Image (cartoon, rainbow, N blue to C red):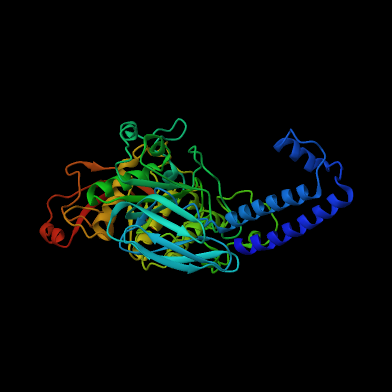
Length: 512
C-alpha cells in the first residue's frame, strides 16, 4: 500500500516540477499571500522564510504532508486493539483452549504468537475489523508474552497461566479489602501491607484506575467495558473485592499456581439486572420494554439485563474455571421468582461461556435484620437459596448465619466467607479430600410426642455444641404463627452410630 502511494505522489511531484519550471520561465517568481492556516503553519515551522513562495514549495509541502498523513493513517488502522480483559498482567486459564479477540484492519490477516510454545496462530478479520481465535495454554506458569500482528506489532507482557474465577454479585461481593466508608473489613490491614507482586495473584476489576467504581450498564450487549488487570500490590489489593481476594489467596496457597479473579459487581443489584435478554425472556412477568425504547435507565440495579450487557457480556469470551456469586438481598421481595430465576441465570452463564457445566458457588445472604412485611422475607430467601443449591447442578452454597451482625449488612469477616468458597472449589472442582466443605443441610423431620426430631446431611461427625441450648429456632402450627422454641443436640440416641454412618445427625426442638 505504501509503495503504491509513493508511486502515485512521485508522479504528482513530477507534475509539480513541470509547473514550477513553467512559471519560473514566465513570471520568474510568483508572489502571493498564503491562506491563514497555511501561513500560520509556515511561520511555525520556519519563521525565517517570508510570505513569498513558489508553486513548487506548495506542491512539495503538500506532497510531504500527504505522505506523512498517509503513514499515520495506515499506522492507526493497522494496530490491533484488544478488549480491556486482554492486557498486561492477565492470567489465562491453564490447560485450556482460550479465546483471544479484538479489532484490526478490515479483512486483514491477524497473527498471534504465544511465547510459552512459540506457536503462531492466524485469524482473518471481518468487514468491520473484528477477529477471534483460540490458543492452547500449558500447565500453570509464566510470565509469558503474547504478540499480535496485522502489520504492526502489539505485545502483552507479564502474562501468567493458572486458575481464573469470575466473581460477581452485589455489595457484599463488591466490598473491598479496604472496606467501605465507616464499614471496615476485619484483619485486612496486615494482608494489604504484605501484598507483593511476587505472589502470583492477579485481579481484573471493572473499577477505574483509582479504585473507584465504574458504573457501567447498557440496554444492549457491549463488546468491551472499562477495566484492567492489576498486580498484587498493597494499593491494588486495598481496592479489590475482599471475598474474591480471600478466595484467590487461599486457592493460590493450596494449589501453588497463579490465580486470576475477574470481578464485576454492583451493590444493591437484583439478579434480573445480571441476566441476558435470552435467559429472562421466558419470564413473562418481567417487563423488558425499556430495552427497546428511548426511556432513560434510572435504576440500573433493578432494570433487567443492563448489568449483564455492560459488565458480563464483554467478558464472556474470557475462559474461566468457574463462577463465584454473592447476591440475593435485593430479591427478598419475591423469593418465589428468585427460585426460578437463578437456575435460568446459571444455565445461561454456562451457555455463554461455552465451557460445559462450570462450577457455580454462591453465598447465603448475610444475617442481617432485613425489613419485611411479616419479618420472614430473609428466611424465605435463604430457603430458596438452599433449594437453588439442590436444583443447580455442580453448585454449592456457603452459609453465613454464624458470620456477621444483625445490624450490620456488610459483615466484617470476609475471610471466613472467602475461605468457605475456597473449600467448595478445592473439594468439588479440584478433587481434594480430607476436610469438610459442605454445610449441614436439613434432610427431614419426624414428630414424637411433643418433640420434633430434625435430621441433617453433611454432619458426619455430628453437630455442636452439645449440652447447651440452641438459638434461632421457632415452631409454627397449622395457623402458621411462629413461636420461640427450645432446641438442643441429643447426645444419646439408640441409633447414633447408624446416623453417623449415614452422614446424618439430629437435633430436637421442643416448643417453649
